[in-house]
Amino acid sequence: MTSAASSTVITIDGPAGTGKSTVALRLAERLGFQFLNTGAMYRAVAMRCLEEGISFDDEEQVVEAARGIQFCIRDHRLQIDGHDLSEQLTAHSVGRSASLVAAYPRVREILVEHQRDIARRQPIVTEGRDQGTVVFPDAKCKFFLTARSEVRARRRFEEVGEKSGASYEDILREQQERDLRDSTRGVAPLKAAEDAEIIDSSDLDIDQVVDVLVSKAQESLKG
View 1 (cartoon, helix red, strand yellow):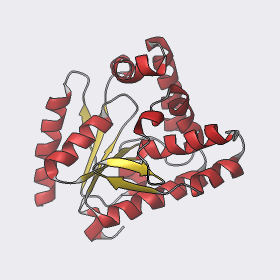
View 2 (view 1 turned 60 degrees about the vertical axis):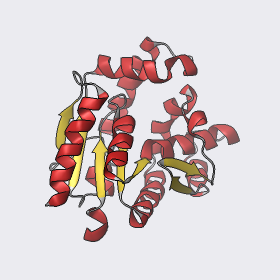
View 3 (view 1 turned 120 degrees about the vertical axis):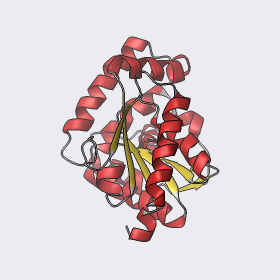
C-alpha cells in the first residue's frame, strides 16, 4: 500500500457479532467513503465451494474457487462476478464455513490482493479480522470493535437467526469456536493492531458507536 492509498483507508477489525458491518457502512456513508465487507468475500468463496460440491478439506480446489471470483463495490455493496448476492451470503451454512476457507494462506493472499486493489480505486471503510494488522498496516485510522460474547451472539441471532434457522445457542457455540480458530490460526490471527483504537460496544447502541467512530476518524484524517 502506498501512503496515499493508506490515508484514505479506515479499518475496523474485531470478532463476529460486534456490529462491524453495520457500523462500517454507516461510517462510510457519513464520511463519503465506500464500504468494504471483507467477511463477505470469504463467505463468497465458501458459497462457491458449497455450490460446486468442493470439500473444505481440498485446499487446491478451495484455492481455485477463490481465484475464479471477481469482486468490486457498487453503492457500498460487494458485487460477486458482477452480482449482488448479499442475501445468499447470510445463509447459516455459508457463514459457518467462511472461517474454514479463511484458514488457507493462499485463499487469504488472493482476497487480500482484491481488497488492496479496491482501496486503490476509492476511499474505503473496510471491516474484517486482519485489516489493520495485515492488509492495511499503514492505514492512518484503525479501530478494533469488541463486545462480550453473549452480547455478540444475541446481536447475530437477531440479525440472521430467523432467516438462517439457527438458534441463539447454535450461534453462541459456533461463534466461540470461530473466535478460537480465528485467534489461534497461524496466518493473520484475529487481534487488535498495536495502533488501533479499541471500542467496546457491549453497552452502546449502533448510533452511539458510529458517533464515536465518526468523531475519532475525522480527527485522525485531519492529521
